[in-house]
Image (cartoon, rainbow, N blue to C red; front, side, top):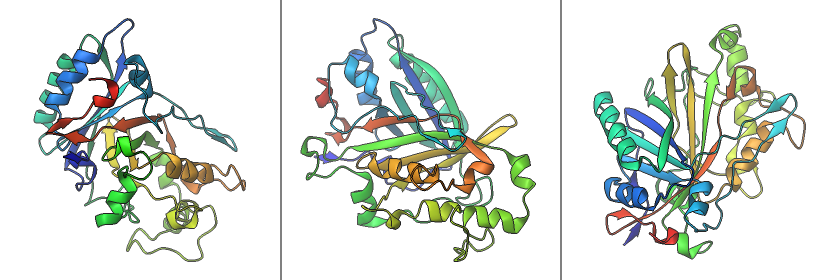
Length: 294
């Protein structure tokens, strides 16, 4: 039976660790990925595969592409591709550390760990700015149809998903310099009760990204979590969808590409990374890598 990786649709875990890997020159990653396919259950360990690794294995995944370099007024968002992305979910930080170690050892020397970030749930699901995250997330069957590829578009990919990953770093000094009502207007919701502000300016984040306001509608399933490392902190933005089109439509509007109105979010936070991955389905209890010849 073909099923999605369960962690995509489950509620956020208390803790997480994100791993990014680079493909080593002249490396053969097939054996490493086979081992990972046996070890990753798709629930506590969610796996995404980048275009470079797919290409190195001689495969092709319809709809998988490189992360585009987006630019707007005074803004250029980074593209930081990786061969492999692993989202470790759990409730014990020490267990996550040791699971990450085992995966790193399993994938060496073909794949080199290049980036690690820890994340956590804050205040029941709020960004570190204090605002609720993912308020407009679809749920139930809508979440499945949003995040998981169905039979109609790419039948061979049914049960898999695509994920856009960005690490946003917040400028808390800049954010704290704004009055409380200015902060609310930048988001487009009141932090106190999460109610949308009807007369918020067009630059308000909620108005820039209202998923139902696009043609076609641009729904994604957000699974974002706050991260912190020393004095640096922000949001690990993770959005699953049946294609990258909805995410790109939202990001273009945030940057004001078509109308010149830049999302107010950029006044106090910027992405430091950006990458796309394909998340294979689960078949027979393991990651299905058959499209990669594995």
